Amino acid sequence: MQQHIAQIALVVRDYDEAIRFYTEKLNFRLLEDTTLSAVKRWVVLAPPGAGQCRLLLAKAANDEQLSSVGNQTGGRVFLFLHTDDFWRDYHRMREQGVRFVREPAEESFGTVTVFEDLYGNLWDFIQPKAQ
Image (cartoon, rainbow, N blue to C red; front, top):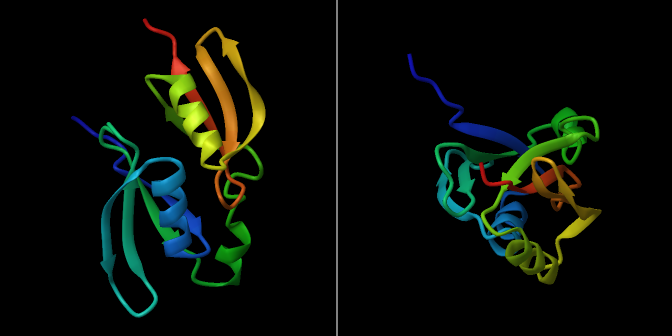
């Protein structure tokens, strides 16, 4: 048996502002943007060099969903973005206006910091130690 997580849905307020943030500030690639109805699109992004897991932007469709935008995990780190060059990407992201909420640190598993996306979701940004 072989399985993998193909996509993770991220509830967003607006498709276009989310696409701009992820493509311009985090350098993600827009893989698909298909209109499904007058209010719903299928929007898939992935960071450069991504394997099989992708990010699906899901526009909040009602007040309950809108209330979860930026807080899908109750304030915990939600997603984990790995890199092969922490300082290159950290400096580029800072130049693009990404807000980091923790200073970079060397941990047993690698170099890590935490940033917020445009809605306040927390992401770990990590360069894992070579194994």
